[in-house]
Image (cartoon, rainbow, N blue to C red; front, side):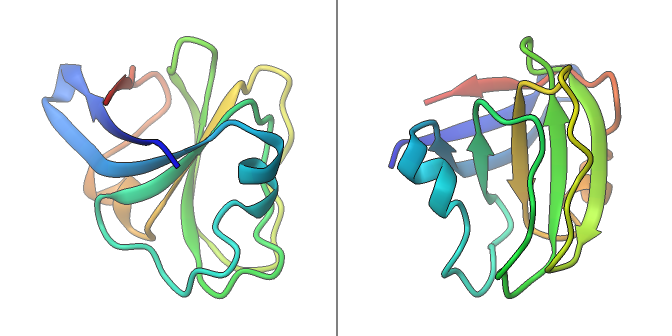
Length: 117
């Protein structure tokens, strides 16, 4: 799996440097299943995706919905197992992070994210 670094340049913040890229049918299907936790700085960028679920997961996650330009549309904090985010056709990709990361980095709608290898 390819790993990326995700930043918010305007805030001079690095959200994570171990963000996996789930951009194939199989990697999107598996997602974070089988993991027992996520470390700070780790996560998963799922694209394309218009929403996610936490069925069969063992832990809560923070979720960030992004448009095609990687602008934050919406966030969910500490989404527990067995939940589903709303589905939106404006959402192009979804970033899954360790619980508490949205608050820690003050990720909010309108923030512009950037990706690098």
